[in-house]
Length: 210
Ligand SMILES: C[S@@+](CC[C@H](N)C(=O)[O-])C[C@H]1O[C@@H](n2cnc3c(N)ncnc32)[C@H](O)[C@@H]1O
Image 1: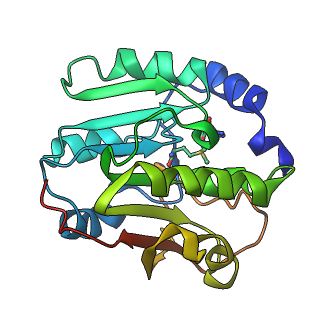
Image 2: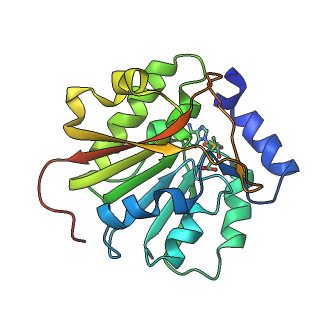
C-alpha cells in the first residue's frame, strides 16, 4: 500500500485517468458540516485536492475563496484548466508536509484522503506530524481543520490528538456510500471499516466568521 505516498504513483494515475474521481465520499456527505463550520467569506485550503469535484461543489455552494494544493503537477495542471471559469479558485503544486503559506492565513483546511495517504508510506507518523503541524500553523484562531478519513478514532487520534496542535476534535461518522459510480469505496490503508470519519479539529480563539 506504500505506493499511495509516492508522487510517481499519483502522476501516472492522473495521466491515465482524467475523469473526476471521488475518494470515500462526495461533497453532499459533508455539506451539512461545512455549512455549520464555515462562512462563505472564509479562506479555505483543500489539501491533496486531486481531481475530486469537492472544491467545485463547495464553490457552487457559496464558498468562493478556495486554494487547492496537490503534490502532482499533472493533476494541478488539469484542474487549473477545469476550474478556469471560477474566479477565487486557485491551484498550486505543493507538498503538504512543507506548506509555504503564512502563519494564520486560512480559516479552514479541508482534507479528504490526504492525511490517510501520508500514513501509508515510510516515515508515515513523521510525515503526518509534519503535515498537521503546518495545518495548525496556517490556521487562524477559531479556524477549523476538517479531515475525512477511513482511519478509526483510536488510530487517527494518536496523530490529531497531539496537544501541540491546540485544537478540540469532534468526530462524526459518515455512512459508507452503498453504491455509487462517483464514489469509490476504497481503503488506502487496507483496513476495512464500516464507515468513514470526519474529524472536525477546531482551534481556540475568535469565532470563525470570515
Ligand atoms: C486519496 S487521494 C484524495 C484526492 C481527493 N482529495 C479526493 O477526495 O478525491 C490523495 C491525494 O493527495 C495527493 N498527495 C499525496 N501526497 C501529497 C503530499 N505530500 N502533498 C500534497 N498532496 C499529496 C495525491 O496526489 C492525491 O491527489
